[in-house]
Amino acid sequence: MSTVFMVDARARSSEESLVRKLERLMDKADLPNLIKPGDSVAVKTHMGAPLTTRYLRPFYVRTVVDYVKRLKAKPTVIETTGLGLLDPRGTAKKYLEVALMHGFSKETLGAEILIIDGELGLDCVKVNVDGFKLKEISIPKALLDFDFILNLTHFKGHEMTVFSGAIKNIGVGCVGKETKYFIHYLNKPSVDVALCNGCGECVKVCPVKAISIINGKASLNQDICYGCKACQASCPVKALKSVRITDSSEIQLRVVDATYGVLKTVGLEKILNLNFLIEVDWRCDCEHQQLGWSDLPIVPDIGILASKDIVAIDKASIDLVNSAPAIPGSQAYEVGAINPNSDKFKMLYPKADWMFMLKAAEEAGLGSMKYTLVKIR
Image (cartoon, rainbow, N blue to C red; front, side):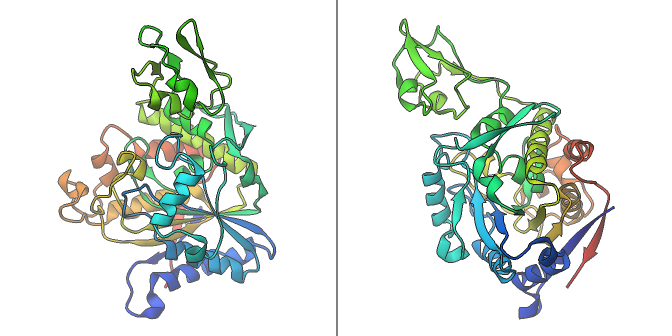
């Protein structure tokens, strides 16, 4: 049975501030013995979509960075580009602009911010996985330079995976564009020649020169294409098509495959997960459209969890959110998930099953759903 450590969000004095509690949480989670002096430490977080307001606040990340420095290790805050190349977080430059708008900078964090898959999301290596759905994933080359990962996750809901926790922060947040694409789509784009007018807009935006105009029609080389969606976003007649995955369980399995591939490569023992159950939104940034927006949190602030087990920490997070009362006026309240112990995620997303992804992750060997919750002050 895995151990999940917890500090609650209540504070009655300066020493009970969540920042101070976060430091004690890392102590209890044995971080000083997990990280050695001189280690290069990746502090993985998500810095929010443009108009969201409920992303993880920079001072929590700064607290972790300073803690790592006190251990004589070398922290770097890491993230990857978004799926769509032309989207607001589609390149390293654009994502760093969003990050700066949200208060994430070298000065505020005390560490460099590195978009590990490169400017266009191309700087990756292929890794074989014998997954449920994926047989190969792309991992940013720079991720392999780190000795340890601190996985900082703003826990929240998600329309397709039901919840967005530590598993998704690694499985989607630590892979390249091509794997992000195959988590969401069944196939690379194809050209509907009946619609294509040969305008060449797709040729102009393709970063890998996978498209050419032949006999007045676009022709796409799927072996070269890496799924950045730039061609689809720029096509004025929507002639480039791909099949979006709409089945939640299919996407959940692909996220688990990607998480397995990342952790198999870097080492299951080289990660500590921190889930922040603060301002828990019912949807992920990526689902509030590309410019983003944030709704009322669905429950009052709960606290922060820490565990070496990526499955156990997500199960504990779901249990704690479900056991909390809903905030009046929130989406959870509107769907009737009002009382403590109501299955808020099931009521928010009745067509999906949050347990399915956890069972798959457990079957893949990523961790255990059985846990002991240890509360510390």
